[in-house]
Image 1: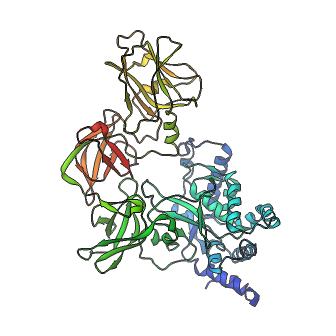
Image 2: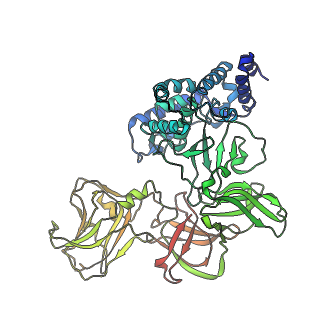
Image 3: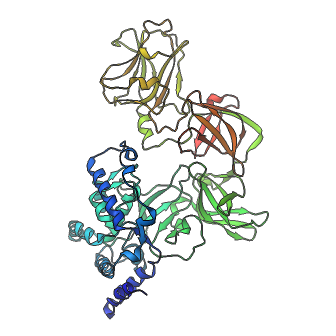
Length: 600
């Protein structure tokens, strides 16, 4: 035991401090191998958070372009062992303040083991050190006085009040990819992604004695990516979003994990459990249809079996190791959410599927295999390589809902005639066809009541041609880049927020005035098919197999004679990095226009 540890323990040598000594032993015994950002790295990071928070930027601000190249952290020197950076006096102050918080009415009933794990630790994740506990305790003084005066001792109610106070200050910015700064600087500049918010909330809550943990799923069940949230660890556990509106965390995954301070000894594990400070808490999420997943084995596998999910692109996400019982592989406490998984093993660093993927069908607890039927093929039409970003693209797509296509013989659109109203943005196509014999001199796209126009492409299609560039106009000429509407590039877009604006075309000098269709592509995250780019299609058959590549000549791409009943992945070979698994269904085997992509 080093001098730091001896000094910290000796401080609690009196009999009255026996519980504090036990708590100090918990911290010291589990400090091995823990790392955190150094103070020098913190000094480089803090100014960025301050500048970002005070700038008042919106979520469309391009952090990577403006800031990313200004900060370079050397991973070999930016982190150091926790034990090398913290002093005995700092550990003693942390323990004393944690026990002070342990005396609050809402904290008194916390079991000592939970107190040690979820209140006592001097760090939340791997943030730079600071005397955050003392800082937060002082910042929460008015809140503590309010709670004591009003005799509020329900931990859940205290969590809610604290949550609402954070929500008023925090700025969510999902493009900020920096490590987060020390917890005092983060409080002063509360901006960042979800994990920054959850770490900030956890520190605020633990400073007043609330046993808060950060839980996570390593992969959504049917959407790309992982997610974290916070949990009040008590008899009636409650998980919530911390900073968003007060409601239970509804994020769905196959397995649920919790970050803890104590170290496990399972160093040979794979996936999340390879982290000694992570535990499997799936069985606690009783509302997520938890059960065991069992597979029969024809023969003993060559190596340990694991359950895998699909990540972004060709990434596999390890979820859990199987328990072999006789001739069965059992995965305990699995959430039967809608998801696509497979069972496999590691051959060195390579993941080898034992069989083809299967789909879990939610509450029925049924599974079905995606085994390619190569003797039954079909044609498919694809419009995307990655699902919509609901936080961003849904906004732009919803702005199309209620918009109209109108015709008139008056340039001022006196007494316009409705030709089509978008009840919603047309999924799995971008062209709306009309069956009419109307011949107007002028046609327009009239935005919905919001007046918002965020469109990447807008083509008016007539009997034999599209409207020409010189025929495009807008009512409010103060907005630039009208040409982006017909440049066949989804990365550019026309944006207008004027309620007086609309897009119109002048066909008065054209022989072809009968409108046949409108092609519309809202502003997006550019995961649609891009004309001129090359795409390669893969299907899964004990691993990814290529079905060939081709150049896109339109806003969709067709592939012929692909196997039925299988899992697909479409890669843009020319650019981009986001791809996600999907299945494909047609209303008929021959009508490619009716192909439906379902991303998972």
